[in-house]
Amino acid sequence: MHETRRRQISRRSLLRATGATAGAVTLGTGIAQAAGRAQPQAAARAAGSAQGSGYAHPGLLHTGADLDRMAAKVKAGAAPYAAGFARLTANRHAQSGWTANPQATVYRGAGSPQNYAILYNDVHAAYQNALRYHVDGDTAHADTAVAILNSWSSKLTSLEGSADRFLAAGLYGYQIANAAELVRDRDDFELDRFRTMLTTVFAPVSESFLKDHNNAVVTNYWTNWDLTAMACVLATGIFCDDEARVARVVEYFENGAGLGSVRNAIPVVGDDGLAEWLEAGRDQGHALLGVGLMGTVCEMAWNQGIDLYGYDDSRFLKGAQYVAKWSLGGDVSYTANTRRKGAIGGWSGSETASDAAPVDPTMARPIWAMIANHYTKRRGLSAPYLTRIAAKATPEGGGGDYGPNSGGYDQLGFGTLAFTRDKVTGAGAGTGGGTGGGKPAGAGPASPSASASPSAPAANTPGGSAPGPGSAATPAGGNSGDLASTGAGDLAAWTAATGITALAGGLLLLRRRGKTQQEQHRTGGGALSK
Image (cartoon, rainbow, N blue to C red; front, side, top):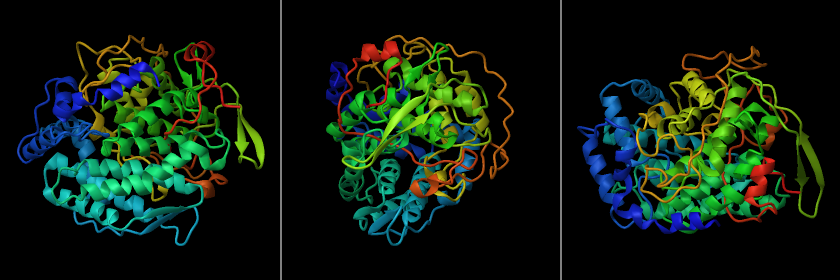
């Protein structure tokens, strides 16, 4: 692990006393503290941060300053927050009184019954109610979220099925941790029992995948599989104040052998400042999924003072810009990639992706507001394609707004409400990362190294590719129709026109690549492991 990163992880004492309140200074100007019913929530969060926790809480996708900003902006009727909140309140999962249906064993991909839809619907209901509580202060929504989470932590003991069980652990593990993070300070929330569920049911499955990739060669599984696992382990590490888990995810992001590490997921940086996203050679749905997952990992790390957004000269920005331009119908380059497939000691083969796949410009995932606002508002960088595609998707919805299949629940969503922010001015604006130092939650890196904005050309008019078979016309707000389910059973029927599938996460040290970082940067980096 890099020396800088070790220093970051060891400086968690900075977070103990300042936590969620420190980010309010840095996260935009002129934002008042939430008023009325929201004030006790802010006070409780600040008190919770000062009680000796190793990490700032709340501190996964949302900090205390973020939640206060949402409440204040919605109270003031400010755009686009009000439209984002209206999208939340209209969702059936966001209604108080949702009754959970916990299972002892969740099956995905195989098993009897294949019941994972019960879990993801309950998880999204918990998250949406918890978020709604922080915005409008109605305790009925907090009560609902707590009841859902407590019911699952009292019953769930295992995740089973085919290889798709790794997707279930990664996706629903990071999501349920984020829901719980929003109510962790409630007296009626069973915090210790929930920690036990994360560390004995969800995280071990994701950690196993990052360690041995289901006994397959390390490149057998596409980028999304790693990223789901990384998201789960990182969320578990932060929620449970487990520095070792957090450190392993950071190391895997930077140096992991699997396709979820940043230089393998984004293997080639072009002269135009865009960087090729590996899964663009597969299909649009998985590429969008991967961008959303990598953004999720970066955002959760950022809120604990770890700058993965800016790592390797803001490589993720360049990859996200590439996917945004391509998804808008623009022409992008693609360098052929050949990856090894197969089982250890069993069958083997290879597959080559030779060109960027066709796109459906109406396909939507609620992933862009978080990423665009980070780079353009927090960091003051130019990101024209991200800006355009985020505007097209506004207001972003969440689980239940993008079709009934599992792909519509791969992201928590509601980015227009949660991640729209005022532009940061002064120190820290206009820099793009490097590794950065530890800093209180929400504030970003202490001393980011200078990084030029990727020199993307002016936003061009997207090409006129027509929606593919089965795609829906884009309704108001830029949201497409149903997303395809995620998992092996869906892959044969997968087309770019019909949706989305596996997400990602990542953890555990596998093995380092032979090239040094400098060699990788000079050559475009991220060559697939042989």
